Length: 266
Image 1: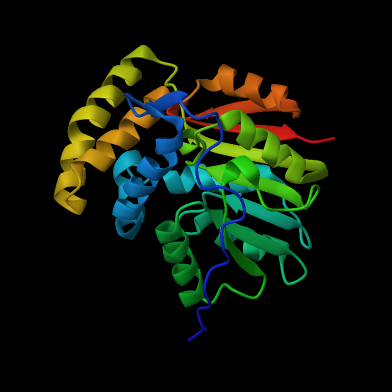
Image 2: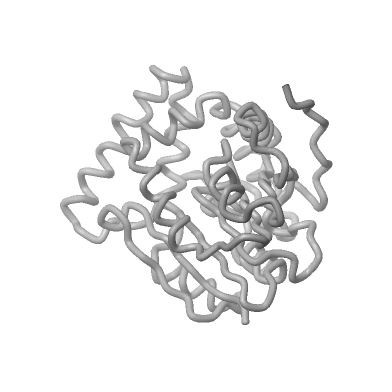
């Protein structure tokens, strides 16, 4: 069995970065900016052990197809360096590890230590370690030299970041010229009938299933609320442009329940 070393320490503050006294949203609640990262951490400490089950519940298992589409659109090649932020249990990191090969490198990063340990242990148990690194890091202030990566991905994580604009700027700085960012995230359904069905599912069935499966309805309720508070497709695209990304576009998946955004640094 591969030896499990301790995780590298967080480089940069765990609490996202606005001035003391400012407020932000935590789901539908209003909280101090200084409190949000801790509250999000509590959610993911709670659901870490059941994270894969959670994704299946939230997406009916379709998240695997969404991630496959992201991998195909990434254009990643052998020898490249990849950063997977909010890497969860390592689905994307594992795939990128295969794609970049022995001469490439993949870093799985997450601000939440419980999630990072779950992802690291799962990948090590599957024999994925030769070109893989693990870092606990805050997306708002990534602890890497400018121009470190050919590809940065963040899947189902940006909506939990307190200062999304700061995170986008940090990702931009961490990319090499010619590098690209992929953001896979729950978004806004583009068909009204689908939106109504999805709302009913998210706010009624999902918390009930969270209670049944993980004995934690509140965390699953927060996850549903956080999706509704996330910027819509065009707003997020505009935020990427403001952060410096070029040739930004997005693809709606499953009627806009999820969107895959892409932008480049030139």
